[in-house]
Length: 98
Image (cartoon, rainbow, N blue to C red):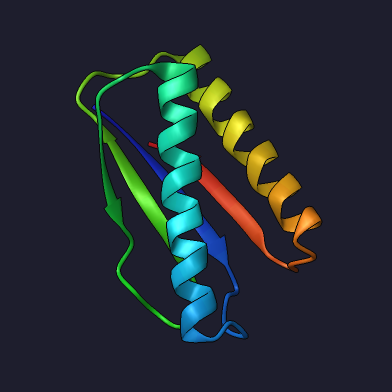
C-alpha cells in the first residue's frame, strides 16, 4: 500500500473562501491526474485543517512501483507549479510518496 501526500504550503494569507477554492482545486487536480496517469483505485482524504497548509492524502490499495511514483509526483508538481504561476499565487506544493 502506498500513500501520496499533496500539501500546499503557507496558505496563511488566504481568506476562508480562497482556502475552500484551493482545497477543491487540489482534490480535482489529484483525482484527474490519478485517473489519466495511474488509472488506479484510490481513496482521497483531506489533511486535517490548519491555518498554514491545505492538502490531501491518497491511499492506494495496490503498491505503486517506482516508475508510477515518479510519474505521479512529477505530474502533480508540474500541474500545481503551472497553476500557481498562472494564478499569480506565491504558493508551493510538496508531494511525497511513502
